[in-house]
Length: 395
Image 1 (cartoon, rainbow, N blue to C red):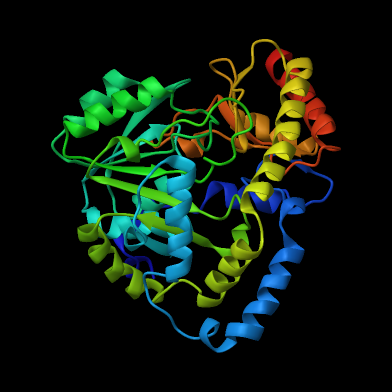
Image 2: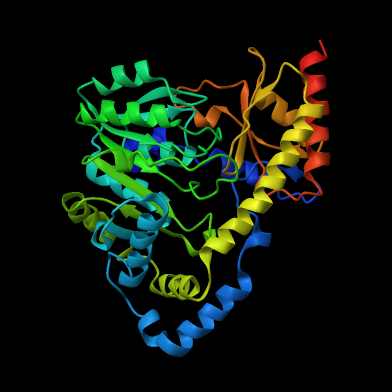
């Protein structure tokens, strides 16, 4: 059936991380590979109560088809939370509920991208976004992500290109690097975008997971038009709901509804009702604070163990929130080769290559601390440290 498939499928591959997770199904392997929240923090009992209440009080409505835009009260909750937490005035009408924020990337790609259109992504960049955009055969332009945000000179040159339609960024605790844009970089990015015709896509799944430093303003809020904001309940409630959203102006929303309806008609009615009932009956801020306290302990533990057990020539990020650390090996050393050695030592991570659209980054890797058991982090880092020492110094 070689000639049966669409030509674009030749350039898009399975998620490398999902394939790695198959390796980590071995319970003896300590895994820092998956980008997963800590399941011990899921509000299981509260969600069970919310589910029972929804079925008791609104079962017929919650089990029926619904509107493509999403449950109105849930959109009103998101709108009010933007006002309270981020000082953003977002109308509920500007919000469309999606099946995870990943679907938002797919929908925007469908309405915006033709083959060869330019898309600016970060280097390294979020693999899920790279995969979503790749289906539409864009011309990727990867802007170098520095410790405080994108390389401004490089970004300015990319924005001058006539074919660049989209600039996708994760300004808060970026996946995979854990880096965040500084306030100065946010202002410079917004200034450059105002002078361009490029639409800015701001993805903010980790913004509330800050446990060090101060919250910084959204770049979306520094712009007046040509802007899209993605959000998600996956990191602050539960990923299994697959509930995210897009914030977009009326003209774009009207376009986004079309591929949304073609894909799934609407996001799960029942999941939206249950989540809304949970949010009304519980203090989500208390829950987020609980998550952040736990993640800070796990992050601090991983950082302290790395400082003790990784060779000095290995560098790594120290994020103020989110779920990831980014490790850089000396030039000439391959994290793919290190991965094979590490799995033999029963520890896993994600090599960096899949996060680069140009196939570079072979000397980088991602570590996840959010889904790591505090009892296993020390042993896992000790194992990985021994692998690194052997890998870097065996010759």
